[in-house]
Image (cartoon, rainbow, N blue to C red; front, side, top):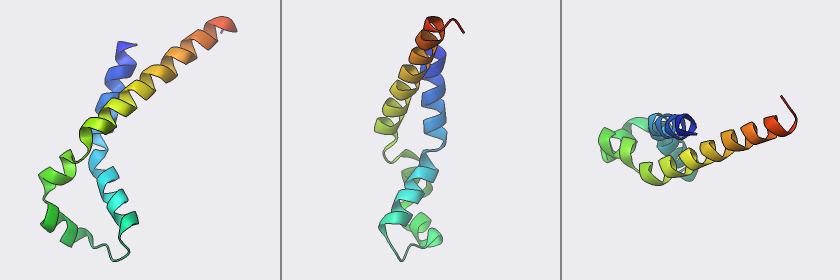
Length: 77
């Protein structure tokens, strides 16, 4: 359970900048990557919204793998 919690936290923290860029790209039709990076800064892109995303994905990963183990025991897999 600890491994699934930690892996969910690490993976969501590493992919957070891509998520930030994707959301801004979807929200603005005239999105320009270079202008966005200059305006926001690399640090802001990497850390914006990271805490809720890490918490959500960690708990989701924990729930998924716990359920997977329980269902595997029920079906003797």
